Image 1 (spheres, rainbow, N blue to C red):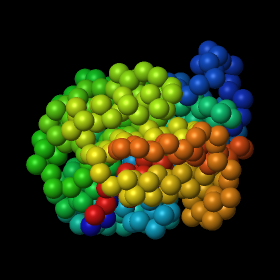
Image 2: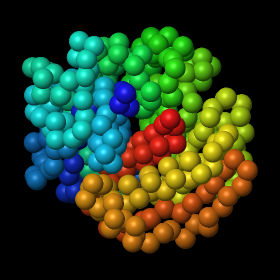
Image 3: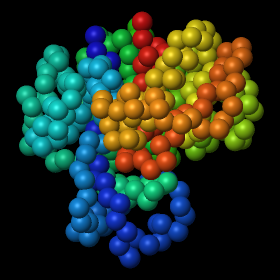
Length: 340
């Protein structure tokens, strides 16, 4: 069975232009952030854009595109199914569930709105402006969730964009996952929302096997620090207490993985994810995998020991894309580490 990926899929409207003056306050700090806005502000930003690119977005959809470009067909959770978005998904090895069966996206098209997030890429950081009714109301793709019993791997991400008042939806997921017979990877995602609640509930009910994050998202675990050798001790401790099979920290400069078993499999998965991220940053995974092998490694020292490794990444100094790199890393790493 193909891997399942959720929670959300939407349009990303990506621009590298200077932001309009009325958004100036959000760009004083040169760091990633996601700002939740009204429909009125969304419309105002949209009207100020020139030459923006509209691409597939959302943690789950980004991850599905990455696996597809690595040759792995996927089943995507897609609560909103507008015809233009279905047409774009159809360019990849991505399928949806409809009436209990796998279906090509165009057969699932409906007269839905196509949610979109506006992203300003500012070199080393990005600002996301989010007006998305699907995420705000935590709408579920019922066809997807009703078919989950047939899965062998589930990628979960997107809780950071859903409001805390939607806790009941997380409880519904826990009910479905508690008796699962497949592996589940949860990627934390940057932001607040329901991340901490979902993480605690799903861990308490033994619904997760693998957990991933970047250095910013470590805060959701209550783990401080920047030194990878210190972080690996804290991640090993967290993994043991939580009963997880593995954890992975992906940063710009290194991958840190901790695990209970199978060093070789986890190492191969991490190396593949590093190569895929470099290829994506060069402009696309499918066409740049070989070229990515020649990209120089970071200066972080390789480390390896009982239940962990640290390996340097390949850094593309002038990336053509930065949106979705973390999702590509998480999907490639966790799928290849967990697959049977």
